[in-house]
Image: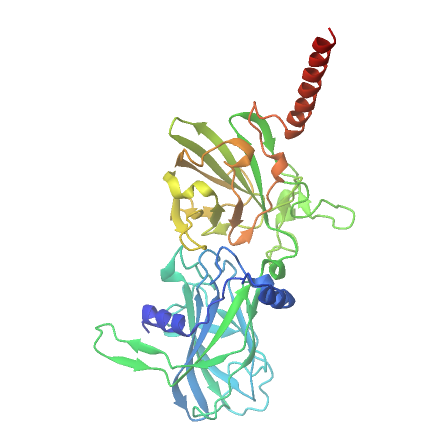
Length: 460
């Protein structure tokens, strides 16, 4: 199967998520659709995961299909332990066999004599196979442990496929029934999938480009992400500092939850605790439940933005990402940062960079990620649990200023989740930048003094 041709086919059949309209009627309509509003991402308005189901051949009692999960999100990927795809059969279909994936449960197959199906459940759940699977059980784009890269970061690995042989199903385009109630876990909740839609059959071009074949039948399912559905509390926060002020603005207190050893014992662990090893290997280890270091913010990830140096025509920023989660190595991590000076980014050190333009021609959003085999793995909490880089910006005389927090980012995402920013009034101020209240008090005093002076002169 040619991945590039499949991707182009899916893009033609995938309905894009339109940007939020500014008209009052549409605003009210969209506000009433809570699930749709929750899934809208202003920095990736067209991002989604599309599941393409291609019927490749008919069987005596059903069909053989190739199912491919395409990640069309620019910066949000599916990390370990990988995706889990589920659905509900329309009739009494069964899965006779699978290649490149497997159902998590077989279900009740007692009605079958002789050959036993791979899965007889009405609502099967399928997962990817692990790396190292024997070749006779693989197909193209399978067997990565369910990990799917984001579209910008690694487009060659932004899809995952498996082959499925379905029985007790229709054997023609008119008798096949499309499955219902698709669900996608990544590995937790967060994605909401729409109904399957029958589309024009996919076309496949041979490697030499001289022959084109097509699927017998194709349907697509579109899934969108909501950070609120994925986790009720944020997963990262931002701290700030600068060379011109000794103040370090820490992450807001309780950004990702609060320490409460009474109602939630063991919700965090001290870095120097003698019971650290036993806590890491505790009951939540297999479920990938975060075990964070005890901090005021209680976030698994902290991103620190430091204004380091000021030159005549340039200024320099240092970014540090710290992992406070003792149970998680973040593979293929990424940052998305919104700042007005990214259109004048001159140089970046030890990170990859790609410009994102969610608002057309406005170049104020950047995606940063690690260099492969160097710092693309963000280790778990500890001495090695951080990565850092520096950015060099050229000044724009018409817009550049250090005042009123202009040099700090507007928004930061880590692995696609919006991080909690400090309040604007807490940003480090310039030494000569007095609060507005003091200036407003000085003016009446000056006016009063001038008035009294004039009266004294007049009386004399």
